Length: 309
Ligand SMILES: [Zn+2]
Image (cartoon, rainbow, N blue to C red; front, side):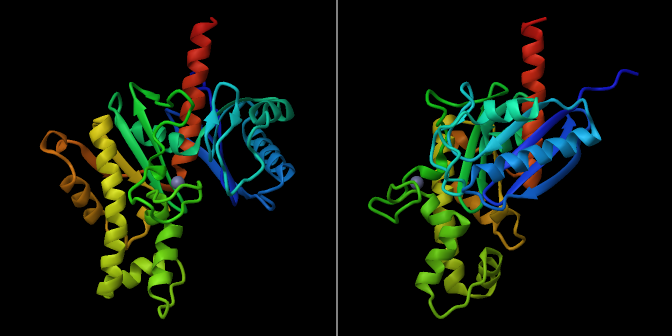
């Protein structure tokens, strides 16, 4: 029997580089991660990538085509990161993809990480339009339309985290005021609750959600912050009219996160003609990025080989 071709994935975050290989048929065969010791030093990032590729190639020498996710706006045609990336401040406007390809003798398809997460989740709903949202330290999102990632004219489409929900509101990392990311991301929820409840000791986001289960005041604050998120998602549904809305990320995976509240809030903000939209929890959890990388590498490889056969 002919062996199925395998594809690699790299998912670059502020603290770790996740990496994997697999394919559509077998899913993720192997995955691991490497810590990025100095995220503001590109040498450490390129070294981590080299290590990851070497590990994968020790397992499977044939893996030469990679899908790679990074934060920020990704110009997929030039293989460069153009938007702001607060956690990896020096990766913008350099020939990122070319450098990785040259150093490792591989082919790389670079993509925004939230787009890859959405792409992975959308594979569970073949041929349907899927809006993906990931809530972690920030808020990322992507839209899969006609089996492809919708990127817009400047590769900046579907930046739901930076839609404004409050006029003259809190300052966001992007420099604007009142973005939903400044209210509903893990970092913002923590910051707001620590400011408003200074006597309460809040260790982290999981702890905050746990406190919310018993403390009515905290619960209503968390609900308010999640209502901003629901409003944003409902507005996006009214604009894009997707078949599926898939919500994931570190915050949503916490067991005390009230997914039903969020879902009901979104429905409450939607007109009757949008009520048929499916609102689901993301399935691939923290492996969505790497699985999306494998899928995009496979899809691009097949596309390329059909074109040039
Ligand atoms: Zn913003």
